[in-house]
Amino acid sequence: MTDRWVTFSKLGDAELVRLAGEIDLANAPELSREIIQHTGRAGAVLIDLTAVSFLDSAGVRLLDTLVGDMDHAGTPVRLVVGESGPVRMTLQLCAFRDDLVTTDLDRAAEELRG
Image 1: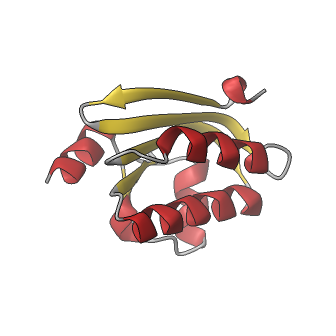
Image 2: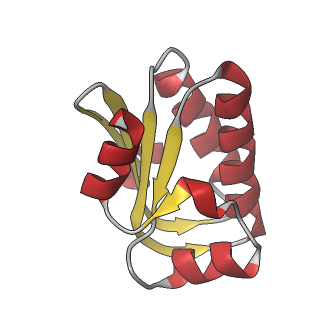
């Protein structure tokens, strides 16, 4: 049951994916399927990670796979991580693509419209 970890809505023309709680090996595969199902035809995707309290290597792989698939499909994507916190630190330690990571939702939406 992924509704504890993920919700979907729209922000302008973009699909907004909000993740919360711990993203790890226990839920990453199910989250991946759910996110792909909801964003498969999206024109743009915002992934809000500001409510994620823990992100392990399975969560990083999930994000990397999603971003890779969206890049391949030509779908613009941004990850919202906040000014600080566990997700921001984890993605920095993993040298995740800086061009896709932003600190707030408004900035991310503006970049996608850009």
